[in-house]
Amino acid sequence: MSLETDLLIDRRRLKRRLFFWRAAAVFAAAVCVLLVVAPHLPLGGRDHLARLTVSGLITENRKLTEAVTALAKDRAVRGLIVYVDSPGGSVAGGESLHQAIAEVAARKPVVTVMGGTAASAGYMVAVPASRIFARESTLTGSIGVLLQTGEVSGLLERIGVTAEAITSGPLKNQPSYTHPTSPQGREVLQALVMDMYEQFVGMVAAGRHMPAEQVRTLADGRAYTGRQALGLGLIDAIGGEAEARAWRAAEKGSPESLPVEDVELGSFARRALAASFSPVVGEMMKTVLSQGLTLDGAWAVWQPSSGSE
Image (cartoon, rainbow, N blue to C red; front, side, top):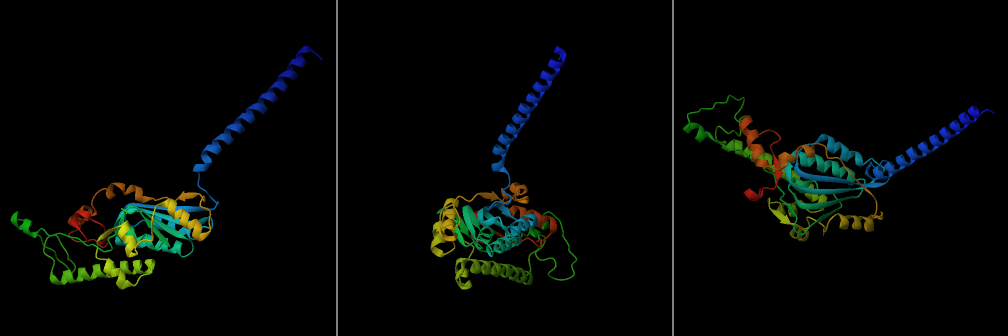
């Protein structure tokens, strides 16, 4: 065999070895990347707990309610932790999220953990849980409904502006910023508020297993501390997520080390800016533009600046 042939054979052998080590290096790098990234990937089919974080102003969010409702049918989800840190929001938004959580609670264990504030609609979404935990200083409760407007006809008259509305009936323009609310209009609006209030009371009564009359004695709009709420039966225990998971492990027989996957919040993040302002200001602007209250203008929200609701 010639020298040139030997060199060719050696070169091919060297290339095969280099290919093997290069492939091994790529494989090892891929394994390392997988080990680093895997803990942050969705848990997929593995058994886990779902965690729903409700923060800021609660409004209607169809995608979120659908995602929460889907947890009820997901076999990999062993239970739901609802973390609430919210002063409340719209009545319709709280109702839709309450219903979605209640559907999960009908099939799987649900616990609620309250942060600094879980009031009004924030409390509404907490009550479907089997057990509610809060800090001693958590502000919660504030069970009630708020419907606000304003009236600037006196100011308009002083600056020489006249407003006129042509309506199909005496209640079509009630309330309005351009003229006082009539006694009949006030009566109708009060009936709307009280009907939504009774719905709220019914949710609390069902979730906390209390007579509706007992709930009404607590539901005058005031907020309670976690320690006060514990004595009144509005929550079950003082603690946070660690205590909630320990209780769940003891009562439901599931391992305390079960991994947790967060439920995506969708448009809650986009509402972060709105949540930093008073809901009353937002409602006032909407009212000014529409010359009255919008149909979704009823709020269950704690407002410390204006006292109880």
